[in-house]
Structures are given as structure tokens and as C-alpha cells.
Length: 161
Figure 1 (cartoon, rainbow, N blue to C red):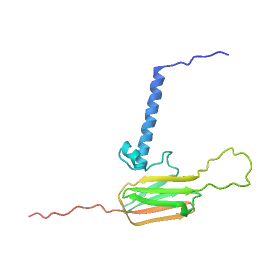
Figure 2: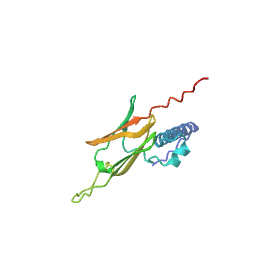
Figure 3: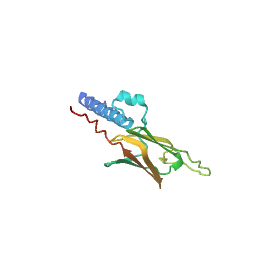
Figure 4: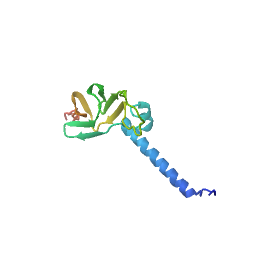
């Protein structure tokens, strides 16, 4: 058996470092977007994020009068879902799914991908919304949340003398 020495080059090291920093930047941006904060230190302080990323995905649609958020939550019961408007621009969805007891199941698992436990997603909304008139529905594992947009203030008229 022969031992072959590793060929080291500064070029490959530079490339690896570039890849590392690109990934770190992408993760920091994702953390800021998920928490709704404008800076990385504010995102970390807020605690409004999931360290392991989001466990469910959402569709976010905006029209003239409202914002509609749709998410698939298969296997989650309606009683185990919490939806809160944290502030006029941040919506939080939290779920809790208890593990199932598998009595009588014998054998070796070769694959277990189903997620159990709690999941949370904070969504930074594209416009300011008001809590009044908010609606949420849940049917067949799909939740739809409709939020009314706040009308932008047009300012105060000042009379000219």
C-alpha cells in the first residue's frame, strides 16, 4: 500500500474560503429575512427565528387591499396551531405536533423523515396590516390567513394663508 501526499495549493484554499463566506452571507441574510430585522445583531437579539430553518413553507400574496398567506401543515391538528400578529409587519405561525406512540411496531427503521415537535415561522409582511378583520381558515391541512392592509396616511392638509 502506498501513501500519496495531498496536493496543497493556495488557489484551492482561496476558492474554499470564498465558498465558506458566500454560504455564511446567505445564512445571515436568511436569518435577517426570517426574523424581520434590518441588521444581523438585531435579528439575533430578537429571537424571532428558527435556528434550523423553517419547517414549513408559505405562499405570500399581496393585492390592493389585503395580504394572503397560505401554508401546508399536513398532519397538524387545528388545535395545535397558533397564529399571532407580532407587530403590524410580522406574522408568526407556530405548530406543535406530538410524537405518535408506535406500540406493536417491531423492526428496524431504515428511514425516518417525518418531523415531530414544534415548528415556528415568522413572516415579514410586505406592507403594514391591521389586526382588525384578520381571518384564518384551516381545511385539509392547508391554512389560509387573510390580513387587511393599513391604508397609508395621506398626511394632513395645511391651509395656505
